Amino acid sequence: MTPEQVELGYRLLLGRRPERPQVIEIHVNSGRTVEQFGWLLMQSQEFRMRMRDATGLVGALPPPPPAGVHAMPRGRALDAMPIYYFVHIPKTAGTAMWKLLGDMFHPFVHFYHLLLAEAGGEAQLAERLAKEPQLLQGKLLVCGHFPVTHPLVRHAPRRKVLLSVLREPVERAVSFYDHVRSRADHPLHERIRDVSFSRALAEFPEFADQVNNYQLRQLFGTVEERGIRRMLTENNYVIGRFDELPRFIEAVENVTGLKRCSELITTNVKRMPNGMESGADQPDFAAVAEELRRRNAAEIAFYEAMGPVRVTVSTGAAADEGA
Image 1: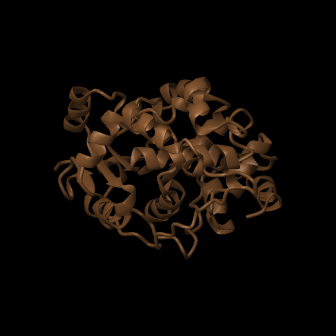
Image 2 (image 1 turned 135 degrees about the vertical axis):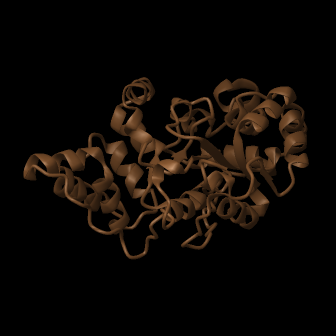
């Protein structure tokens, strides 16, 4: 999609321009087709209220785009199914998974970044979730860069199942460092762009925070083994390895009872700009890798022990609230 198409969609369906330029950018980079974007706007409460004001009724929405597949299995009620959260950890094939899962759960999907943009910030979103428990009621899947401790998860309207992909910690740290330096729109770009990997780790806490056991903290809210075991026991998880994505998708299908309706496409490979070397090619990378292994000892131990897929919900159980 183009920025012009996004703005036109807002004008036609919501009667206004997007609230801020960042919203346009989010939609342009979402990977959706124009039809899927239009359907997303028509699911919003704002569109429904506008139709009610115009007609006095909330009419039935048009059918979803032909390419989409209705996520509701025949004979099943939405409120009898769990709500699924895809906890997207940066640099773990999340873009590919958003597209595949978004199609798989269509049209019952909410995207965290859109909720955040609509609310105007984290505090406002937390307040809205507390005041509007119905906000997530009509959804099956919430996707985004949020931890399990986020109000989105705490205010789950039904039993929840947490989905995520983990990547080998040192490999992910390298990819994240390269990503920050090569993306001018990343919040850390200006500070990290001309800084070596070793300096970034040692001198920039904001960067180090996102590579020090970050995956464990996002998924479990702790790096302690006892706390992780408790979370795995008390919550439903489907966690896959970055190098075993097909098996992760199969596990999600088995747990949800839904079937994928698009292929997994992992082409989100970014090249470093001319004259900028990857962190893995810097002269002191061996020392950096050793430091990363030291810092991520807990995460490495979990990753190596988890197997291709870690499932803590019985096959089919998450698809039936009574199971």
